[in-house]
Image (cartoon, rainbow, N blue to C red; front, top):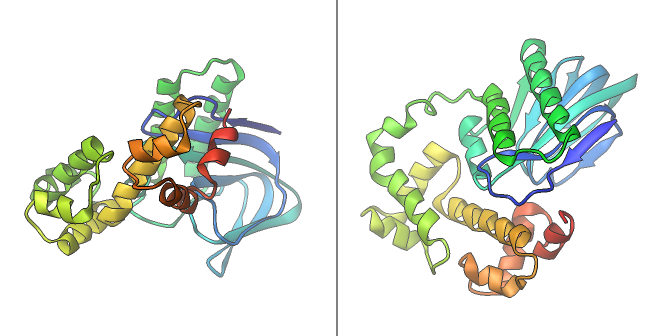
Amino acid sequence: MTIYFRNTPLREPFTFESVGNHWDQEEIDRADGYPLYHYLQTERGIGEIKIQRKTYVLCEGQGVLIAPGIKHSYRRKSKEWLTRFATFTGVMENGINILTGNRNIIFTEKNTGLAIAKQLDMVLKKFETPPVDAVELSVDCYRLLMNFMDNPCVGNMAEEETYKKYVKPTIEKIETEFDADLTVNELANSVYITPQYLSRLFIRFLGCSTHEYLLGHRINEAKRYLLATPKMEIQEIARQVGFGSASHFIAMFKKKTGVTPVSFRAGRR
């Protein structure tokens, strides 16, 4: 059984939080889902996975990508069930839902699974001989995520006038002013539309509301501070990423990631 966890600061747009193969899969029950996108694939044997009250079978080579927060459980259906898996993160992890067409569950059949298996095994080999090139790993992660791309608006999204006029400048404002007391109303005013209309556009193109995107970006920036500046106080990090109080920051961080900022930092040292 092999498993590796990310041990570098979170700076790249996409990367692997964990990756493994030849795993003697134990029974898992996640009532609140997993905090990150994660992929599970059968190497050998048969597994049964229940997602949102529906039951599916994963035979050899088949896999499933599950979005964060989706209730699921899985167990073996044969005497032996070996799996490979990966979990995904990055400072632009909110963009994964764009690549996946905002789908909560994506199943892969054997042909696609074979391609993903080769990519994962290649990534695992890189972890075997540290230090791992973080930029190269980010490219590998993006290439793997492209296997799940099935959204007709992804390819031409950047060319749509509505996106260029309203969504793109809003994203740029969030990325440059997230540390300020930025609100959805201010973001909408900056592009001269209502907050409701702006959120509808964000849901259409990005699969989340304006508020969710802003919050997600702040949380991702907070992850970067937590890992890159281990001595910085939580209250200061909260201020640096635009939260009015440490208590609000801690509550939102835990809601988004499933752990407190202190636990997140301690678990990745």
